[in-house]
Image (cartoon, rainbow, N blue to C red; front, side, top):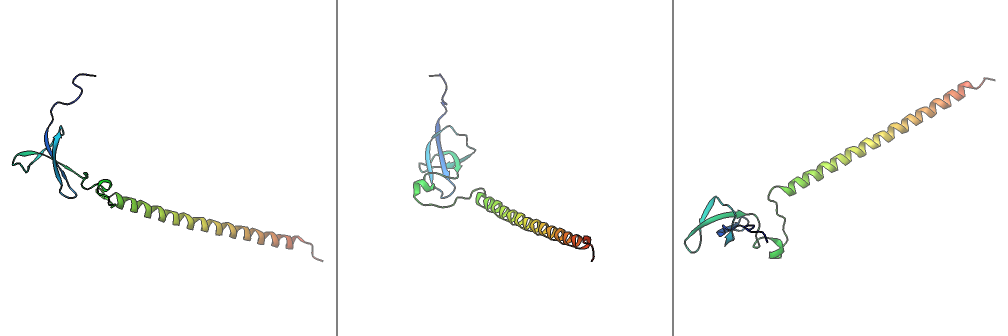
Length: 122
């Protein structure tokens, strides 16, 4: 095993869940700018996290949508844009079909008129 591979600067750190305010004290090497006063009266470095075992649906047994950075809103916007684009493409395809049908009809009408006029009169 390599020497000096693992950090040696472990110290007590408080982690706070931003969803429900749950805090726990553990040892960590993570850098923290803020501090907080713990239940024992001492101050410890504070690290704020979005999800812990107290708020994660797997551990709590409840399902809910976590929308921390607007992920659901972004998905809904992309979905709506895709649906609008699909509608525009369908309308354009129908327009193309109608134009093609009109051209074919016009060509058939011209062909009928030209065959009628090319026949010798009796």
